Length: 398
Ligand SMILES: Nc1ncnc2c1ncn2[C@@H]1O[C@H](COP(=O)(O)OP(=O)(O)O)[C@@H](O)[C@H]1O
Ligand SMILES: [Mg+2]
Image (tube, rainbow, N blue to C red):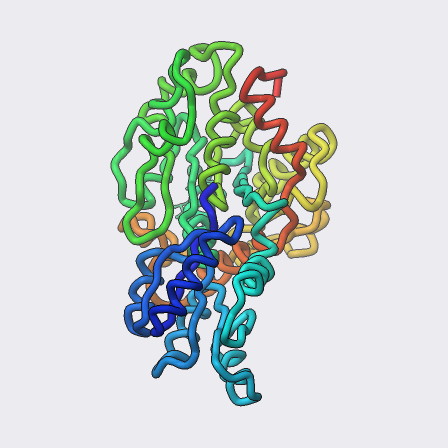
C-alpha cells in the first residue's frame, strides 16, 4: 500500500524545504504537496487527499482553513513560533491532533507524524482492511450499503477506497455509480496471467462524484464460472489473489456479494477483517438471516469482533416488534439503518450514491456511523492475511 501522504503548509521557503525533506525521510510517509499559501493549501488538500497536514498557524487566515481541513478528515499538526495559551487554544479549536513549536527538529517531526497516524500503521507497514457486505437474501440492501459505505469510508479517511463487486452473476454496483458494465474481474481471471498491482490497476474503474475505485463483476452471468466454478483452474483462487493485491493498494476494500455460500463469497468472508451481515425486519428475511448466522457463527467460527449484524430499513417493521426481531436473530445488532426510499431509490435511479450528495438525512447519518464504527473496529489477524496468500497459491476447499 502507498505511504501516507503529508501536505506541508509554511510560507518560509527554507523552513518548508527542511520539513519536506524530514517528511520524505520519515518511514511510512511521503510528501503529497507543499505550499506557502493558505488558499492553495485548501485546493491541494482537495486534490491530493493528504492524510496529514503540517500547518503553520502563523500565516494570515491559517486558523479558518486549518479548521476546514481538519473537519474534512485530514489529520492536522499545527506548527507555530509561540506556544502561549492563546496559540495552543487556537490550534485546539482548529482541530489539531498535535502541536509543534518552531524550530522543529527532524526527529521530533517524524515522531509527531507517527503519533498522529499510529492507528493506521501496523508494524511500520499500512495494511488495507477488507469489509465484506453479505446476506443470503436478495434485496436487503447489500449493494446500497456497500456502495455508500465505500463513499463514507473515503470521506472519513480522505483516502481512495476500493469496491469489489463479487455478486458475480448479477452485480450492479457499477449502475449505482452511473457506470456502464466493463469486463471488471473477468479481465483478471486468465489461467496464465499473474494478478498483481499493475493488472488490477488496469481493470479498476474510477467513479464519478466519489473517491472510490470499482472492480466490477463480470458483465454477463455466464462469465461467472470463470471466476469461481467450472471454468476456473482448480489451483487458482482468483478472489483471494485479487483481495490480497487490493489490500496492498488501498487502506479500505469494501466487497459487495451475491446471496450464496460459494467459493468467491467464502473466500471474501474468510479474508475480511469485518463482515456486515445485512438483514431487514420481515419474517422471511429474519429466518434467512438466522440460518446464515448458524453457518457463520457455528461452522465458520467467526467471532463478534468480525461478524457485525446490520438491520436495514430498521424503522419499517410491520406486524413485528423490535423484541421479536432481537429474539428471532439471537445475535446483537451493531447498526440500524433507516428506511428512506426517496433517498435510496432516487440515488440508484440517477446513478449517484446518496453519500456523495449534498445535504443530510438519517440514512446518510447511519452510513457515516457504520464507517465510523469500522474505523474504530479492530483489524483482522495477520493469520487471516497470511491465509489470503495461502489461498492465492493453492485453495484448500476455502
Ligand atoms: N434503507 C433503505 N431504504 C429504502 N430503500 C432501500 C434501503 N436500502 C435499500 N433500499 C432499496 O432496496 C432495493 C434493494 O437494495 P439492494 O441494495 O439492491 O439490495 P441487495 O444488493 O441486497 O440485493 C433497492 O431498490 C434499494 O434502493
Ligand atoms: Mg446487490
